[in-house]
Length: 555
Image 1: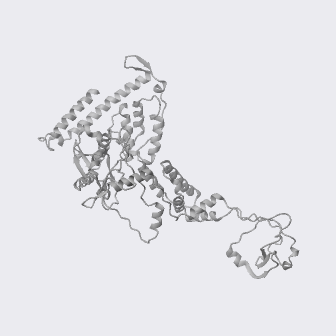
Image 2: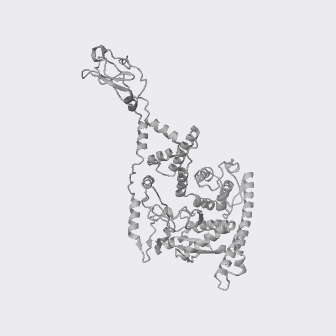
Image 3: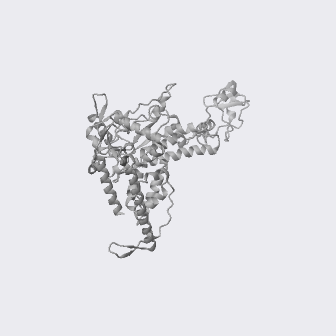
């Protein structure tokens, strides 16, 4: 296997000499027949065969419980390594919403398992990764020595907190409303909102500050009938009053003599039969009013009989307390319901937010062509050596090429988009020596297709959240700055102020912002020219996509 790797290194050296030979042009059979790609595929296939054979030998060695040491002696293997139990994790097929579950489970049950060889970890990984996720690992060799690289490829592609939150928010906003007034549909909506909010909370979203938005959203998902019952339940109190009448002898109130009272036994405690609204009360009241002294009740004539109200002398048995009981939780719910329209409070800036703002003011200038130029707001602990970022970008590029083989139209549109970026002077081609790879951050990129777009149906997306072998990404080493986006509640409130709303998009807006020349050496991207067997390096000297503020975060 080592001899195979040596031969491949010799072939790559010869290939590089052909690229640099001015007498060898693109029409040479070597390039025209894609000899490099075919040889590379043969190399990977044979390397895989060697590694599969090695895996079988190691598995047999583990089954026998012995393994030869470097000095030729045979040591007993750990029992946990010879009798591994079946690990049930659940497949991961590339669904971003399922990534957190798979990542945490695989890390706990496989990666952190003591005495488990890397070759076994790689075997478990390949057995549980399917579909699109498995395609990302096709270019990674199968040996245990390459497990860390394979796991890092998955982390770089899927471990994107911003993308996860966007997916969950999209699912929350598009949660189907109740199809009918059944309890099953009501619980589906309530559980769906609750589960998605908990998932967002696990990712660090401040859902505790979303009470107004949560009530507003949940109410919009339930049926009008359930909305009515819900609002009625807010206005229904379990206890109307604790009033217990206790009065003196009614014969001492001469103005009540001979009246047919609605409640002849009003002086004795009893349950409340009915509670009348003010509208009903006004309809049953008739002409007729009897008054006594200041300490006597007033009698009003009604269709139900004479109704008593007002004061009554207290007896010597003790006082009577009249109160209205409310539930504290119900009070909080009512407050949340009626405060939906209240503008949220602005959060204070952190120390890093202030530093980022100062960096923006100090380093942002406007060029003669009208464009703005910025500097990357690097954190103090940002690494100097971006180990292995080119290999990860190259793996993503090869995966993209396989999609192009299946979809020639996508290849044409994507190549056109890249060419336009170069022609628009948003990227520049450069030469990077292998020994200088570590000084550059290579941006993985992939195609995003948006059928509804009126400007660009296919566009390249650059992922500056991809982590290198050391676990670092460009995004996490840049200050994000304060959140300058308007809060969703304010956007919704403003939206309702006008009868008609327009949605517009500025084509390639963030690509119009220049990057300072001193920061060019910190990021570049790899591209395969016309699916040929050699790679160009291109400086990204405009910003790719915005972050949380000032367009400082890329990807």
